[in-house]
Length: 202
Image 1: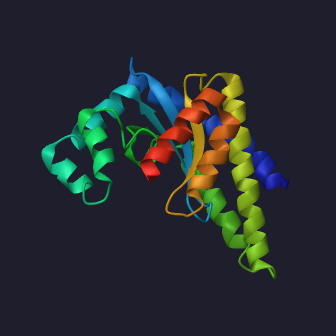
Image 2: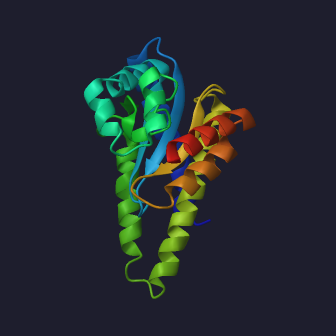
């Protein structure tokens, strides 16, 4: 792995550690159950998303209003929407975009995103454009996974927190989430997330 990514790993750890201190202070007694590091299809941005059971419950209540349920029935199977209505299924449990907490403006992750953008831009002149970018993205995703493992080992994320990597607006998101969740969590936690995704995706 090239030096850029070797340096990136501890930088991600430090940035997430700092942001988690702020998030825990803001969340107070709320129970954190999930955390995700989210990137984009080009792997040039990175942000932290965190959710609590209390924030999830608040978001789910908004889904159970009559107007919202009518809207959901336009896009989701009726049986699943019925489960949303009676509170037996949450559409938001493992959707980082719907979570209550994220890193702050000007966080270390914002600075890392700038580095990623510059690094990716430097590849544009490469003779093997596709291969260079594929290698860049593979090394980046592995670096994020290793940083997550370091954060687990430090106790920044306890065993009660389900951790995974996500990619917004990309067909690879499901595979990335699944493989990272399997790697980063206990089997029972991974199975819970996998079962949710099966129901979510129909």
